[in-house]
Length: 133
Image (cartoon, rainbow, N blue to C red; front, side, top):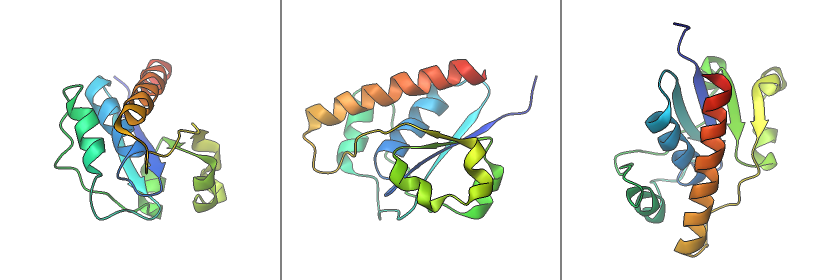
């Protein structure tokens, strides 16, 4: 078996999109691991993020937003940014590992829209797992 790959999901606050991606990835992947971080992490996971994941049977209520660091970037085999705005926070030597997803921000959206975004993230995560496993 090959070494476990580390997939890094990055958004701004690490309280929504990247947390959803990390949760789906770690729930669905057989042999790899995901970590999510933010460029300016919020103090806690957004309650609606927790709710939309509970709706699909995944509990992320104990997760905490984490800060993007150079150490985490070095460990990552693949880096997924939730929108191109995040790219300015990635040093150029890591750009070859980056994949851009352009996922809409959750902030201020109604719960129904957040569920649609969650489902979009799940599809992308499943596709990513298929590519690397």
